[in-house]
Length: 232
Ligand SMILES: *Cc1c(COP(=O)(O)O)cnc(C)c1O
Image (cartoon, rainbow, N blue to C red; front, side, top):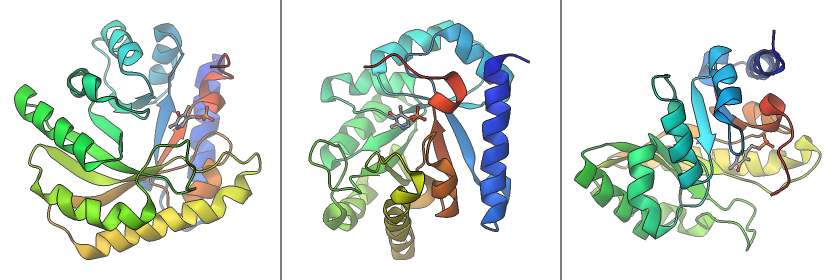
């Protein structure tokens, strides 16, 4: 077995183990392979090993790789910031946009989806660590923003995503995961029309077991599958 296939298998086992440990069925947690800066050949190896969901953080890079991966079956997620002038291209390329952090961006994606006749699923990105350099809606604005998304017809709001502060020790990230989960439950309880809370995207290579224990339904794993990336 190749290194990537072995990594995929190990990560899938760790995902299942963390789910079972917290009394959840392993199928309730989806594994996304984060393939930013990874070439199409290595991505193909991950798909052959059972990955069915890929995350990219740059629209242009994603678009070119999508062409190279034509014919293969996977769900494609944007997990990096989306600039206004790239919305059309992003909507054409991705099935999901996980980084919606303003009403304005949501409206632009909605209009673009209408124009392209394509329904795009989105997650609201929350700045759960209140880090000024990071994208995401502030917690205190979350409810109001969600309430305004009900007017949009072409996007499908499916849940929340966050990139908590990077802390070496995954256990130290737990309080952030827990808070995001609380917002997820809170928004679900509001039962807003068209705003569903089904996907809670949190957890990366070094902290995904903790994220799963705190309720993650989708972990975004790059390094543990593809190895270290060149520094940005
Ligand atoms: C790069 C990236 C990941 C994956 O990080 P790893 O530590 O390599 O697993 C997850 N989420 C986002 C938003 C990323 O940009």
